[in-house]
Length: 204
Image (cartoon, rainbow, N blue to C red; front, side):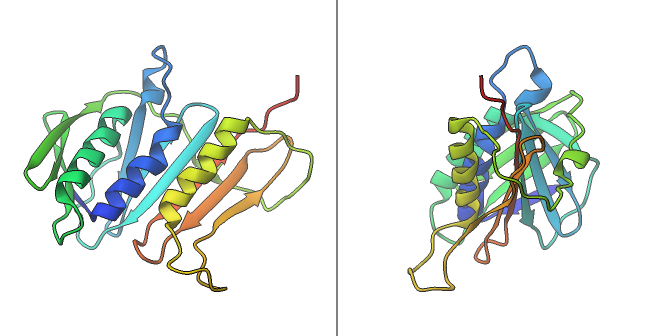
């Protein structure tokens, strides 16, 4: 299995997924990024138990394999290293799955090994199934709220000009005091999609 990314996609993926990777050493399954492949997409999902980021990257030629998990911090670091080495030329960043328990991330002249993690990733399908309900009065962690919108912005990208209709927008799908808030974004330039989930908090 090989996933091919442009430099822009690699950087956006790394910055968009990073905030949702847990730093809690007691929960190794939340340190991971889940990778799912189809014939047309590669999907990367991370959660720390409070927020959930899912990023979908289009692919034109990919051999699908069963879903697996990789080290989250390691993958983010490897993507940024490879993207920096590749630069803005026509070269690409590649993720090659090896059956000996690693993913090799390569850029121009650099290569990093990212470990495949044998952990049970949390079931996220029902959480990502958003409702259309919007209600005022929901409270969210200030830092997490800023980070999820910023992460979505890495995927949507920056508008080339400020004329109406050309904005790269982040969409708040719903706000509810007892249900997760869903944030989505997409880019016509890279074809990438972002879907983030943030749990509401009760005021103390």
